[in-house]
Length: 455
Ligand SMILES: Nc1ncnc2c1ncn2[C@@H]1O[C@H](COP(=O)(O)OP(=O)(O)OP(=O)(O)O)[C@@H](O)[C@H]1O
Image (cartoon, rainbow, N blue to C red; front, side):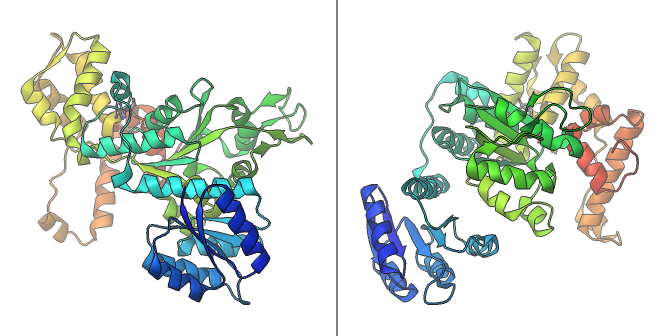
């Protein structure tokens, strides 16, 4: 049950919405203008503000959003719009609305939107976070007892109990895919498939048919009917890894799936219902991608219902011993040991490639260790060859004619160059050397302007 402020200038619509919300068990305060809404917001606290956009001949809903942000920052604002103008709705969401609904709104749509808003409010409030069930497998799946990791697990646990779309952000190797599997495993969909889609690995021309499937003969090479990845996740979870790499033409189609839960195979007349939960992940800053026109803003809002951020390993160094022990136990079947000095040094390393880099280092140490003991000497040998750490200091930056960004890019380029030289230009192996994923290296190569077809 929530406290809802309803702002609607048409008397009939106000009555119907009010009644609908009350029947769903909510407490409703209804008013007819932004001025009245402001007065009400001064009097009591609300969980959700549901406001019409067009009132009194202007976009008065935007004023309600502003007032709500000032007076009731905890409240989630849902915007009602009669004109399905995506532009206005997007403006409203930029201004701070949580979601928008197009009139006429059905009872179910309204209930779902309120539920999403309440869920979002609860999961962003750290105070209300619920504790995950303490079973030993939980920890093995997503290791880490740092405060940051505990919070991540709580958030994922809450997400698992709902069916909302989740957007996982974090640097490469922080465990985004593992986090998505965790949500699936603890959700009501756990018995159905978890289907990962690595968006960066699909060539642009094949994207649509990979995701949506196709009918035989719909294009050259389509020799048989094919079920797409979305349909194959029916009943389960579709994990869109590196969603920022999805071509714009496919983004618009994915938006439809999220809105209508229906798909059409390439070349097919028939639409099919699909029941999938979508979890997306990205190591890019989607806000920037949106502002540069590479990612659809409306899709970003639809994906970002439950945002979860995975912190880099260097911000939770206290997790390193537990992770290292678990990795070594798994890879050596419990036979190898990490010496104390080696563990201490591990805890100090920068780990720009996060948990994946830690895994890579330990695996290489296990391969090279003759006794099964992982000691400091072995780590130093390996680490100093793979990571010739540049001497970084403010004074060396000041001696340089460039700013920090260019300076850092220069270092990144140098290290990547070295890895490519060492592996004869093999990107997969160079990525391993650097402790980052293939996709991440490919992205960096593009960003840094390295030439070559395979980049
Ligand atoms: N908290 C954790 N506990 C145990 N293993 C972890 C944890 N985080 C990451 N890992 C392991 O680290 C490796 C990288 O994780 P994962 O592939 O989920 O990262 P990612 O963020 O999806 O990377 P990318 O963005 O490059 O795809 C995997 O082998 C995963 O099992």
